[in-house]
Length: 376
Ligand code: IPM
Ligand code: MG
Image 1: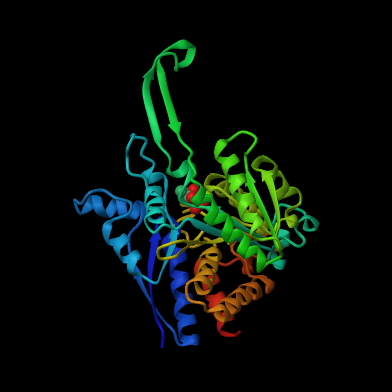
Image 2 (image 1 turned 120 degrees about the vertical axis):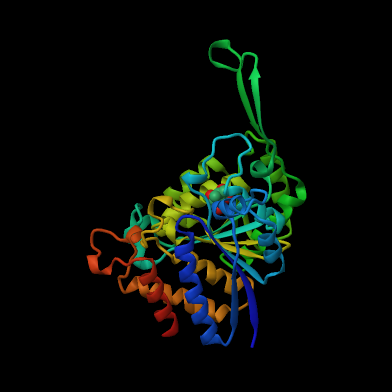
């Protein structure tokens, strides 16, 4: 009977609530498939900042114990980090997001997959017209350990003439850098994935302005030459942002650098009806990490109303990419589809036609999915 060790990182805000649903689901999948998922909670984000501070340890959003556990685990499941409590404006203050960026970088998870799929039952929940959404199935492949996120972040105080009206003032710098190998490995993965999908890759950049993008485009063209059966195209990021709402069904695999991928994936989540429906898998050299694409939603934290589905879909991706349990993953996806088809909603995906007694809280939605999964 296979046993998998999963490091679970509930984090902040709604994180602990949606993580509880993922654990419930993992227990059900374990019992149905004869697999043991041994979950071990560790600290990350604001929760880690508070705990390390309280223990008199060096304040950290990614304590060494968390990283060590993650490195030796079979998979990492993360919920969300951040919140106004830790929005400390002091320069150099430890932020919860540093935990997330730190674990991505330390595990060398350079590849972030964000599948944007349409749930028939939710077509009405999107702000876009149904005819625009027809046929949408996009795999966003985001570079995750390079670019602006990991460049130099610097503040220069009192530079002559930088202030308003010619006075001295501050200047801030964020640098963006990409090496060829960092581009190649991500774009290559995108082309391989397209070969198993509808055979199209759109590489998104800003090559009309940025040198990193011009290098990105060159490398993408070289990689494309290795995949003659895949149709390759390039798009400027501003145009891609527009095309995603104008004609989203044109995309199959969309590959792009870190910052563009962050922005475009939030935009694309709206095609699914809610940011609460978008899961992600981060793959690379170390232990793979799975997390919802959304944040910690501090405004609704602790109320038991958050949508757990992106977290549950992160479990689906984990089954596929870390454990090769495709059958269980298919059943889970079908279960979520059937719960939605039956009209069950969390508040974020409800609309005017949803009866009040069909709007579920976090835990009730988790129960529905588990029940539907076990019935598959
Ligand atoms: C995401 C998030 C993170 C990111 C934040 C929380 C640092 O927005 O995973 O998309 O920008 O990568
Ligand atoms: Mg984001």
